[in-house]
Image (tube, rainbow, N blue to C red; front, top):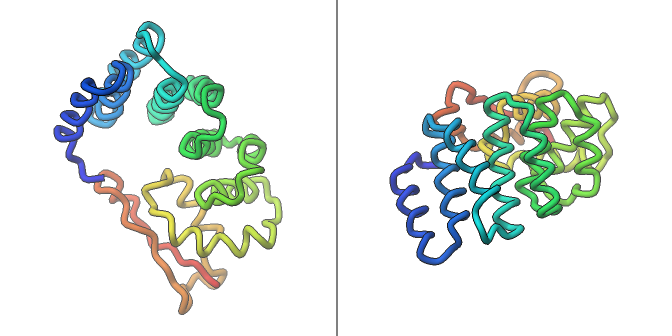
Length: 205
């Protein structure tokens, strides 16, 4: 994430030469949603998905996922409706599953996360979210999950997760003594806009 929004906007405009209009709209809405125009982006994207021609499953899945993320950031319960609509268009999209799982975790619904991700344990990012849900329900982590958390957490950039998610991962994986051992690993730095949430993670063997 480099914050080069004007350059990104120009890239979106160039999409009009080779892709249906809905893709340009989604691309632009993604930028607007993080540059102070979230409400307008949300409304314009909803309208586009409803009225534009040539909205294929890939565009619907991308658009509904983005709407879910915008609603999530605005604490709008409509997020779930959008994530479910996206799932109907593309059930196995990994980014979508992660975004929906993050929303469910923030809503204190770990059982629903387990139902959503129980068959996705081979994907690092989704395995972490599943572990978070198990922890929230006070389930014992399986041996596979316990072994996987240190190595997968170190590989995944912190920007892949919400602050709440990373804080819970820290509580799951931090050394019981409160000290980092010789195998200390750190996650990638948070993007600038989240620098106030930067934290050091300690992953024991």
